[in-house]
Each structure stands twice: as C-alpha cells, then as structure tokens.
Length: 213
Image (cartoon, rainbow, N blue to C red; front, side):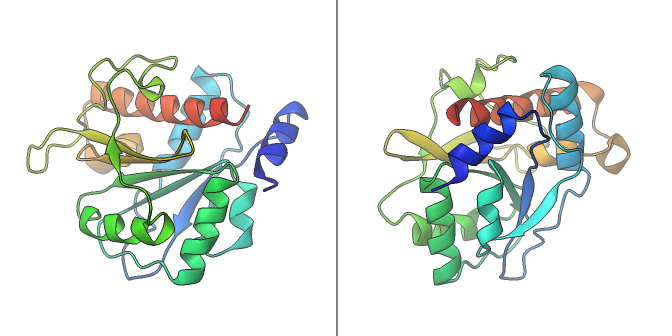
C-alpha cells in the first residue's frame, strides 16, 4: 500500500502529519474523549519535537481516507460492528503500514475482541511483555501500562495483534489512557496521573512512527 511512502514523504517535507479518530458503527460512542487526542498531539509536539497537526481528523472504518493517517485512535464504551467491507479496509490499511490504537473506555472489550477477528481471523490478541519497545521510548514504563482509572480494580494490560512480525494493533485495556489525556476539568484526575497517561501515549505515537521508518 501507499501509506508508508506517504508518511515518510510527508515527514521529509516537514509538513504536519495528521492523526485520526476512528468512527465505527454499532451504536457505541466512538466520539468519546473529545479533548484526548488534541491534548496528546500538543504533548508530543512539545516533548518529542514532532510536527503533528493540532486537530484530530475523523475517519470511518470503511473509508479509503484511512490510508492518509499513520496512526488511528479508537475508543468508546459500547457496541462495535465492522461490516465485511469495514474489516477488509482495516486489514488492508494495517497490512499496508497503518497502526490502530484501541483504548477501552470501560465497556468496549466484549465487542472489540469479536470484531477484530473479522479483520484478522488468523491472529489472536497477545499481551505484550513489559520489555516491549512500546514501553521504552522516550518515557520508560518498566511495569507496562499505567493505571489511570480504577473501575473494577483489574491490572492495566497492553495487548497486540502482530502481523508478520509487526505490531499493527495496540489495545490498551483497563487503563483509560484516553481519559487521562483529556482536559483536567473533565475527570479531575491528579496531574501525575495525567502525565503518566500522556507519556505513555507519546510512547505509542513514537513507536508508531518508528515502525514507519
């Protein structure tokens, strides 16, 4: 696919690369965490010296426009449904060099696991070891994902789908990273929790772009 050459060419031209949030069907609130990605983008530009466009775009799972984005963020609390064409498009995007970060906003898990099997029926979500490079970019997380919101008290876990040796989907579970990225007034999280979430998010973005080199 053209995605890798597009990303690399854009970076060389020093143009602002855009990130996107995934719009999906099924009735789930794909639009949740409205301030999350813009805040993460601002953090990455400041702390990592990146040149990301300040606002997120919205892209549908079945749209050809998804190939314009090196990183796509997906979140929500409820139901997700990928049509056959959605699943095929997502598969082509991910095989072609794209990266999907799914952040369970508490309630997504039962649905997304089923829908991911439509995209990669041959793959299983695997928990990433704590020494995986995604936890060791600029910011070090020797114990894996930080726990931002408690919910039912389960440990935060990071899962992945790995296609031909490349991590194509990162699934952050029981952590609420996206909520930690949001404006402080929304969840009133302690600033240290917000910083942990933003640092981990920056690691994910940095890892995504490293894979695209």
